[in-house]
Image (cartoon, rainbow, N blue to C red; front, top):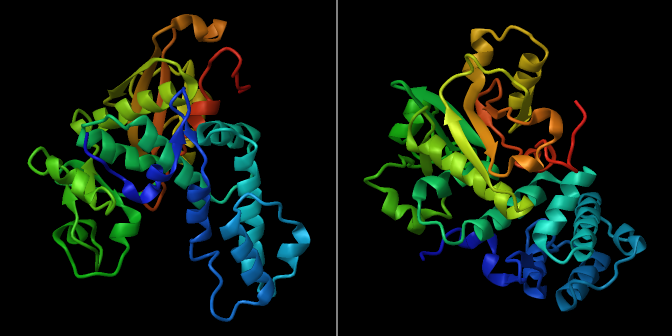
Length: 332
């Protein structure tokens, strides 16, 4: 199989018998190499000593007073976040277990750390994937996307790439942006080049109903649920909100949850709200016996919507906490 997403650092991790990712010293040292943590030339002695000590042993205990002795306030804040995150990692045998615990405990973690975990976990879950549409769709789980409608197609592109200041490209003009890098829309003609470009995140994806982008996203959702919950599900993209009777729903982002809440409470969904919906999916459990009793035979819907400024920010953690599985019931 071709490799992809090398930048996430998955080569530095081991796997347990279940196939989940085990921590290593080498992986933790990558965090210590982040620009937020590498002491700048003007850093004080306390910051330099802490950084050097952790490079030697990334798991050694760090007392709060060691961080509080750092002169720079921003550096102190970064180190407090990092050590809390590291200590949480150390309490779990795998990244997957640690991520699930963070989600269920609703722990306060900087979004960049959560996105990095999702990036790694998906790289593991999709290790044998040879479908470029699935891999590009999986990027929505950990990288915000800007949405546009062009000639009847619903397209998303990586926010970081689109908002970068580089010479104008045709896709940037399509989005009405003054500058942006060259971005191609993923198609059958260029899909084979995804693996060589996977760490550039410079493919746009067509999420128009009935096309391969939404089908790829549905397949990734199934894979995510199977990998983290060991539950087999079938996820089907739907074309519209019409005639959807919500017995249960999961918002795949904050705006999708708002749309679901409105439908749940019987509110009328106007055209503006409907146009915010980027993806609607029906989820079916292969073993219906694991569903809470009152939902036997009912369809479960997943709603993905964009913000008012046309950005998608998926919250894949909602799939771990929001599904109506026995033992994981969420009070509505």
